[in-house]
Amino acid sequence: MIALTGDIHHMTLRNPDQARLPRGITEVSACEEYLDVANEAAIEPTIYASGRLAQKEHSALSHLCQNFRFELGGHTYTCMKPRLLYAFSRRVLRRANGPRFCQSVDIARTLDALAAVACAPIRSWRNHAYSQDCNTVSLLARHGMRSVSNQVATGACVAPIDTPYGRVWNIPVNTPPDHESLHPDIGDEGNSKFSDASQWAAEVLRQIERNELTSTPSVILAHPACMAVADGMVALKWLISHLPARKCVTVSRLVDSVMSRPLP
Image: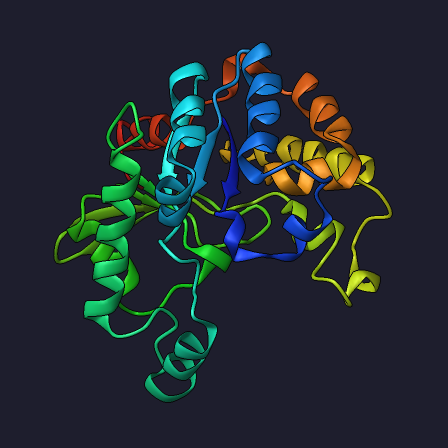
């Protein structure tokens, strides 16, 4: 099984990918093209969206939910802003996402904002920048999440995490993630792992084949904005054209599938 996933953020975040987007293009409009390509190939991605995006660009995100087939997941509310507050929490409190109460409020605000535009309940989650601490998973379970996708590890397997509030499934990104592989933050471009997006897409496909040898579900991370910046979605279109649509599922459907299997 294969899950195609991506993250989208509010434009006031002003991240490096947003700075590279062509004038007039937002992360939501890039996502519209992304979903059009995926749905044309009978693939339904899982898109993790920030709560502030749902609040600031409500109509645009609502348009996506009403006109395309995909799963909407949570991606925190402010995406770790203000930065000084989160830096203080990491260094002094040793908590990546702030005190437990604050992190719980952030999750709740995100889910409330997304619920206002979503066509189905929100059950999947990925923290911005994969930021996770000792409170994250239990809080996600408490707020009804069934999966979390904060791990990046080539070839890693889907696995359960038990908490006092129930079980959450770890959905690792186990193929090369696009952003870190293609163009790291401005000023760090020399550390790109691939010379262009076509090489990245080819390696993702090779890793999927390696995962299949061990019956490991594959999770792809391809941000709509990153794909637009890299080459105008050319590599994404090539990758999607080589994915077997019958094996592609949303993260929630992937969780349904693994839940139906007996644990080793």
